[in-house]
Length: 361
Image 1 (cartoon, one colour):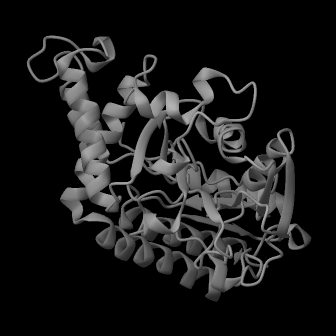
Image 2 (image 1 turned 180 degrees about the vertical axis):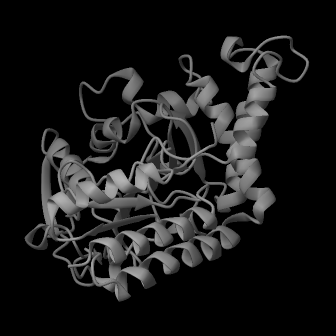
């Protein structure tokens, strides 16, 4: 069967080249006579895999030397707790709530201290990014938290909030490696890899070294201390070994494509094709304020639930998978991550044009 164009928000499309390489190495990685799935994480061969993955990620993102790269488990959801456990020294932090994941992180932080909602876009179903130029940030706040790209609602912080000198923590799960980024602007930048980098099961945390201390909240489990993982090279326990191996292959693929500046160019080009169609369509419309649109996740609707369902079915018949919107918002959503080829977006627009011509009343 031919491969479909997979618009899933995560787990999501991976570069075909990476999948083929992994398939070729499935039974014998690099002459070891075994799969990476079977390999001891304490072996020389695996140490080289994780070291190379970190080195390539550091080069891609130009990560400063005073930041640690940690390959962890538990997804972004576990980070919702690990961040306050490790960073909320004064038991107070500011949260900007721009979608479901920021909201969940905010609720989780309340378990550990005074989490303050600094701004929110809940009043308009998270369809925009609020003004964050002059937030009510107090001196006793330990950090300011954002979810930089909102997978469900399709919004993106194109300008980082003014944190008034406070550390910025960002969940970048759905825009990770989609464009160049100045890591030094963040105290912690982290993301689950299953959207734009690799298979589910790995979360990458990039954290400034001065924040990695034994001084965590009382009762913080050993496994939930950043220091535990930083001191042990992400190998305190058995890491998600195969997932990290695939991430490493994706890093190599990205370097081969020309790095993050090239990915940004391609991603903007793909997004423009889809947004230009939505802006001229008489049937479909985007749901996000134009200046806050994500180039990774594009939600859209017809305004009629039955018609939305009919379109999702029609798209599937045409080899376009996973276009149904998140269960909490309905409609449709096209996730057009790094590995989604331009041809996939062009086909989506063609199918939308055809559907519009047949269904416009």
